[in-house]
Length: 153
Image 1 (cartoon, helix red, strand yellow):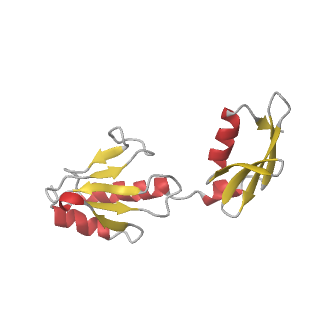
Image 2: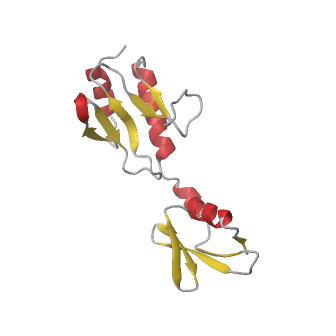
């Protein structure tokens, strides 16, 4: 088993992660460029060597209800690989966002229409001139519209 110091050195070798000291000597590492609400890549790394890495968007890992995999007994290779995969799973998918049109019209069964419009890095939903909602990704916005009974024109 790797020591706390060895795990810390491995994790700190990822420049995209920001260290955050928390209570009881534990350490979290955040990935601020995450395209999801999830920012913690490493959670509660403890001086006793226990800790967690976010694997909620990855397959092949046994995770807890928060999508975290326990790294207590990980080798250096396994820890590096899991952290790299975690970061990649949270990395914005620029090509996906560029595949969507800048503006779409959506309609429901009552012939109410809403406009989905990309503005800067956000997706805004408008009812005429009134802002109805703001989303960070096209997928979030389109899921919202679908759930509300709207479909693309």
